[in-house]
Picture 1 (tube, rainbow, N blue to C red):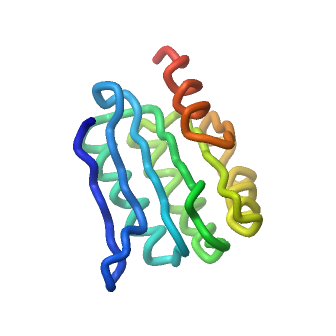
Picture 2 (picture 1 turned 90 degrees about the horizontal axis):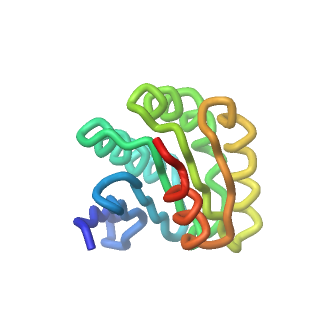
Length: 138
């Protein structure tokens, strides 16, 4: 497995990991637990740094372990993160939806806000999301 980057909250809980898959052709982000504006921004900027460092057009963004809503960060995700990621080369976004209804509603709201910028599909598990991204020829 390739190098995994972990981001932790103040008390040490991991809230985000990112890994490059298949020689870097897919960037996989895993989010964990309750998210805040600060954690969403920190993870989002880490993804941006990684894509700028080694360009990649595919992101598997797994929210299956997220608890609760993070809608307080939607405006930032739409107006700041999305244009920066698009400019850095992101084209395909596979969203794995969480079991939490509140987190799922937040993902659905995000997709409505940014779906003109990326080709976005939602999945119930990482394996299906990864298979879709692998099927795309750049």
